[in-house]
Figure 1 (cartoon, rainbow, N blue to C red):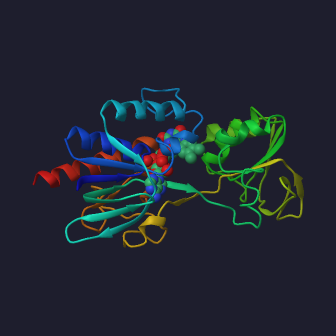
Figure 2: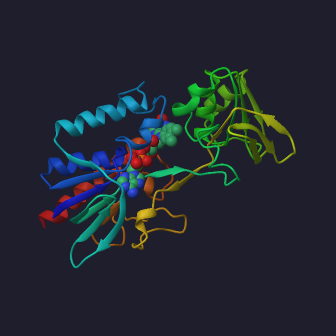
Length: 296
Ligand SMILES: Cc1cc2nc3c(=O)[nH]c(=O)nc-3n(C[C@H](O)[C@H](O)[C@H](O)COP(=O)(O)OP(=O)(O)OC[C@H]3O[C@@H](n4cnc5c(N)ncnc54)[C@H](O)[C@@H]3O)c2cc1C
């Protein structure tokens, strides 16, 4: 029986695990993908105090070094279900079953899809949700970016350094981003902005070749990078009633859900701002609360 199992090893889960280990808890972390979570998809982080120019993958590697140095127990397994028992929980993964007194859910969120026919077929064949992962495949080609928030604008700028031309397709007439990044977008000669447009159809045989817009215009594009928001990673939470109407976890000031012994932190939680340090702070707060409860 573990004192605490942390599900998800992005910034929130890792910060929680460091504090739990320092408090001498018997802690286990479970991760289905890469240590560092979304950090692995960030080109450059310039708002992390003290580390003013670090790539996301470099920060993820530093976090990995830290947990290895502390000998924190982690396993690469996907959590499938959580079952409430008398005074503990059972966690079922794709490989094992574990029992634990407390759980911190730190599974973050993933990019939302457009919901168009062929979107899954063209995934990896023109369609991408990650410019840093796939941008290099489109060197000197024409690509399109969909979205009008910070992520879409950051990725459009990143792609403009690699490709021949970027169409930036936004369904409104104004961007929802900081003035400085909007200015960079508007002044970039490689970026053509298409306001009040939506992608309605994807065309191509084996690979994406063109997209059709709401206005009827057809754009010939090798790549389509989609940044239209996120949905929380909650597939494994079907047996727990802890989510709000938008699908995110609802928590109190210590990040406790309404299920005794279960906390939710980071991007999985319904809140106004989704940032690395905020996710870490959530994880730390929850971890300290678990320790306090165990010591009672
Ligand atoms: C393109 C982009 C740029 C960004 N730029 C910045 C920036 O410059 N500055 C900043 O502060 N923030 C930035 N962010 C936001 C930041 O990355 C997130 O706020 C932060 O990563 C959230 O951390 P988290 O631990 O809550 O979730 P995540 O980082 O999403 O980690 C969740 C982890 O849970 C794992 N997981 C999911 N489901 C399961 C399961 N069933 N079983 C086991 N494991 C599971 C996932 O594989 C993942 O590793 C950016 C995000 C993106 C996408």
